[in-house]
Length: 568
Image: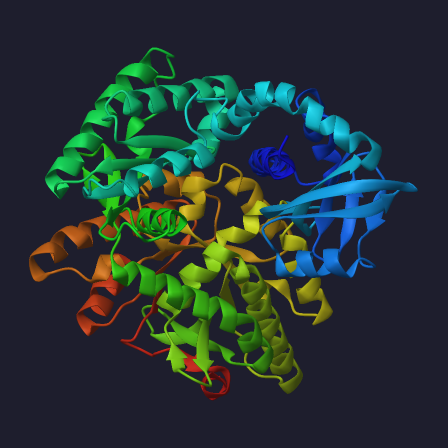
């Protein structure tokens, strides 16, 4: 029997095992032992060893072994070669080591770079005899790697294998790679339970698969995300197919009776394949980038977007800002600006809002509209918000020490904080460290918090219990209603600038809405602040309607703290 053929077969089986391990959603080596042990029915070996980049190996029997003394093995690990075979002593027994690289596996916060199969030398010749029986189990192992247990269809690996074959076919057609997402699927999971959601995923897969040709492929990537490779003719045909998928999926899902799930929560990111030699993972990434911009709504049923190079440039820009942010904060590139608030009707400055400005050494002023949404997405906003809060506390402490006239400062608090239940303890700790009276600080929460977070009343009560006042920022920018005002126990309502940027013919209607909001706020003992006011005519209108404060360029732009100090 050909020894090279034997080794090749073992490497193939090892690769399949590595692929299956990647598909398992585990975070520790201990949790993975059960998965690895399941392979003993398919493959005769003594041990499987997972190896970190530093050469530390974790054996399935719970022991560890260091390969740092084996120069050949260590060089192979560092260089991430495709495969290797060598002889090594484990537990005082000569052992044949077969190994393959593995990527994308993080266990116990350490990157696993190789998977080793250890076979005691005396048993290696028996391995040759067992090869025939092992081939009988190949189909079962491939099922683990390539067949999705929920849909019964392709996993990402199965999809990739078939999609590459189609794209490399000598008969060249134009294709589109579509990345599908079900929005708010975690919420749906909580509402309907895992079993119903698995049925929904299965129904979606089957509905789309039934409407594909034999040269079109679908696979479930992860959770509620799917990839589809389909023939592309034009955008009109593409939308018609999405419509068809929607209709068939809706019919299938209704059989499971989760009637309150809205199928319009589906969204599609599309990458038109113009160059078949582009690596498939890169195609998938571009479709995912498009998915992030899926704002176009078709027949109110779903959202979609087609990838373009501007999206790629935007992604690169975001990565650049992410890389700059940490050092920028350390170097003092972020600064706190204050925009005054003026009381009506006497137009006297009685407060201000703290705003963040990024003045880069390399680029100068970077717009908040560019970095704030990014930081809210990647979580850096938490660190930045706490920094702003401490800077304001330090400033108020200085004013107290200098016996300056004191005014209330409002500070934005991103909803990203609310993922941590006790997040506000850090705010309280900072305020106490500067011995700042809490009544001089107002915490601004965005309107979207009250639409997305069912615990918002508890959050507001915690803020007010600590002695801070609380306001709703950007009211009117989303889907707020007068009913929302009744539900939120805040001190101040800030009317978004959207109310004041109307055409002449819309101003009468806008005034009616503003009047209703201000009237209800007064009934509920809330103060009102109009932000983004730029025209004198708007000031007079707000005086007439009984608005309490104005914040906008009509009176003052945001100022650096030192400049603002001169206004006190």
